[in-house]
Amino acid sequence: MGFKVAIVGATGNVGREMLNILEERGFPADEVVALASRRSLGTEVSYGDKTLKVKVLDTYDFSDTDICLMSAGGSISKEWSPKIGKQGCVVIDNSSAWRYDQDVPLIVPEVNPDAISLYSRKNIIANPNCSTAQMVVALKPLHDAATIKRVVVSTYQSVSGAGKEGVDELWNQTKGIFVNDSPGPGNKFPKQIAFNVIPQIDVFMEDGSTKEEWKVMAETKKILDAKIKVTCTAVRVPVFVGHSEAVNIEFENPISPDEARDILREAPGISVIDKREPGGYATPVESVGEYDTFVSRIREDATIENGLNIWVVSDNLRKGAALNTIQIAEELIARGLVSRKAA
Ligand SMILES: NC(=O)c1ccc[n+]([C@@H]2O[C@H](COP(=O)([O-])OP(=O)(O)OC[C@H]3O[C@@H](n4cnc5c(N)ncnc54)[C@H](OP(=O)(O)O)[C@@H]3O)[C@@H](O)[C@H]2O)c1
Image (cartoon, rainbow, N blue to C red; front, side, top):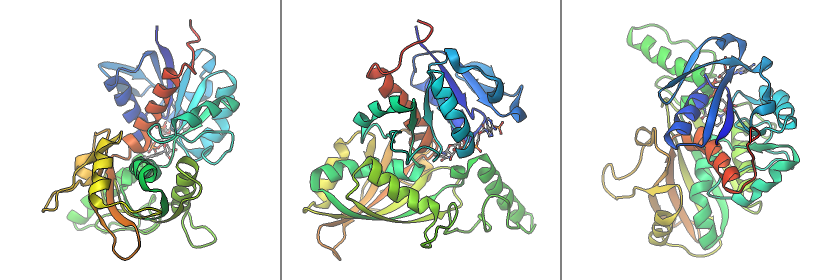
């Protein structure tokens, strides 16, 4: 007998990917319920060869649901996750609403699976920001080998990280330019995104950083090691799916590019594509639909002691969101931390 799973935000970019991944991985679900806002009442979404009718979150009773995969933004999660958790349903949330709460574990299963047991304090588990998730999967095995002191990361983030409206905005502006229309500033991004790059993701903070940059720093510390110094520049690029990151790492101890390559080849969730020839590296296009995070361009940074540069690419809707969420649910099940209410 399997679990009863609800997906809140099932009509969104991440929610649809969750449905695909539950099916692909043969997740032990007897029943999957698709939930969204009133706008989506009656809409249908695909789950394997089945079609699910979308139900409305506001009127759904979670008392016989075991696991809720929450992917509907921060304000919905702030309001609903505690209520759902109190009904005995474990919430795994994709928004930033709970990530920095001391009573909520922030989990990347390849990195800090043991922290998951904290979940019982609120019945909520947080999933990290997409840029953090792919970076810490690559950093963890290197940190274990040579102890990371400092990370300097520049991100190249796709528009799907801003939801379905972000995807539509890039599509419409690109089409508009081809028919000689003025693309206009759009609603989702602060400047034209088609044929452009925008060095702002989320709002500005007092010190001049953006919230996205702060999230990468704070989440890396919470998941991997609070002692690591992290600085980030987060940039939106006109790519539909797949985030890329140029990561400069300073270690406590020496580690050569060859050693790093060998370590990463053995690491869970990582594929190394690193040939020093034209095209011998991963780009976002190849990451789409994949589970693994790709690491390329592994080389020494000779300007610092014990420095390496790496290029990290992943499907932001998968490892950055839906896949990581489902891996967390699998981890809960493997550890016997969630039980079937129907049983
Ligand atoms: N995209 C990424 O790379 C990524 C990565 C990590 C985390 N996340 C997080 O994942 C969440 C979803 O992102 P997304 O990219 O899938 O966004 P999206 O494509 O804009 O989808 C948003 C989903 O939330 C639902 N929703 C909105 N208001 C609702 C309400 N009042 N009640 C119930 N459902 C409601 C929407 O339903 P309707 O269709 O009915 O409006 C839709 O299903 C966000 O918290 C985001 O920060 C995204």
